[in-house]
Length: 367
Ligand SMILES: Cc1ncc(COP(=O)(O)O)c(C=O)c1O
Image (cartoon, rainbow, N blue to C red; front, side, top):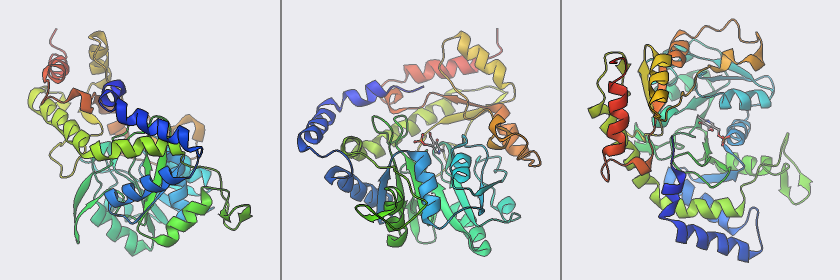
């Protein structure tokens, strides 16, 4: 599904120089490299502050805590985004309120959100496309609720708002990013960040990521944890950040090529024309998804399902969410299938690999 070696091969000298710089610095956690990356990434998002943390799930938890979510609070979120949000909400002792998604965008449906009672909403920009932030923000404001974005799949995604085009991370009261290696901006290990326009939220998250300290050995904020970004990952991310827009454009070119090449009556293609889409995943729908998957497997075509089981049906929760009925979410989980979509497949350099995958999909059910 990905080719991280190809992605990094062109950057070997710069990545190696960054590693040497960190090794030679004698300082390995929360130092100059982290501060430099935080500043550059906040500027990229247009959000004022970025706080580096250990991974994307911690980033969600810390972003929610940073805007004041705690034990017993109700957090509205989608159930089709891999379970990370629900995991973070439960870790805070808060209550997940799963809301169904819009059929076309697979992101939170503002009208359904409006029918719920919630203290905060976690909005996941799924597959590389921004959710309808102006509408979701308006609903949250009406409910007096905080808005946290999950941008793990949407680095650089943008759309128009009341004050012009804004990137993922610049819409909510706080936003969480994952830099897991396969993300549009990925580290060479685990990493994450919380992004926010608020100096107060940023300060709280800075304390929460490191034992609640406001200074060494002095705990003022809790419940806290240790979730720090290390110097090595920050230095590597700083090498990669200037390439993010180019890689996003390559992903979108892959998606456009699939759109032009795949023709099948049982297959619905995603809307790659959506403004500001960054092509994190190319997720089509098929009414006979499992048969399509078997067909692709037989032809050695890499593919995946994001995600097969919605959060409220995960076995770990027992019957805790048994009363939740999310028909669109459940239909999508049964029909979605992801094709490879990453910069190394850029069809502007070589269309053959994308065309081969597209031809395999088009051949589904034709003997
Ligand atoms: C939408 C979404 N949210 C959160 C995460 C969690 O990030 P991490 O794996 O860095 O904890 C991921 C990816 O893994 C994700 O895709």
